[in-house]
Image (cartoon, rainbow, N blue to C red; front, side):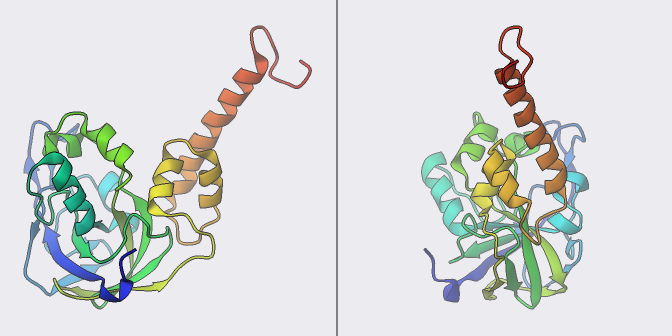
Length: 234
């Protein structure tokens, strides 16, 4: 596990919206993030100078920033056989020495002079797939479990490349970023635990209703069997 004492910001990345035929229903995206010199202001809704085109899915107070580990980018470099500079995955913050995949939902970091909280994993979408132009990208990214982390901003501040990243607090109920992605994809035990985590994104309550509702429906159908009622002894 990386030593959190050496965790730092490798690059701070921003981007502007542009039209693209592959960019889902909006046909517009700001996924192309590039490193910028600091310091960059960190506000409640993200970095100064950064645009979020699809705010419901990639923005707002609970997804103000997206962080991805340089170590995970390097893991993908080996598998894709191409260079992946900081910002390639659309992340605002490329970290080094910080195990983002192993970070806990609700974990609090000091990022430069700002304070942020881990809220959710990145769930790959058609825009990400179109941007990467790699076969079966959504499936491959999801199965790898190296999702990166969305962050809410608790205290505004500034951040620059080279700034330290310090873990300030971890919640009592532990669900990692990687585990939360499994919960999203249907792990009901992890989802129930996630609902106990303080600091989770409020979206988890809605997602949990869907995941747990589906599981209950499948259980009822399995219990009913051909012509059954779905109740014990039915």
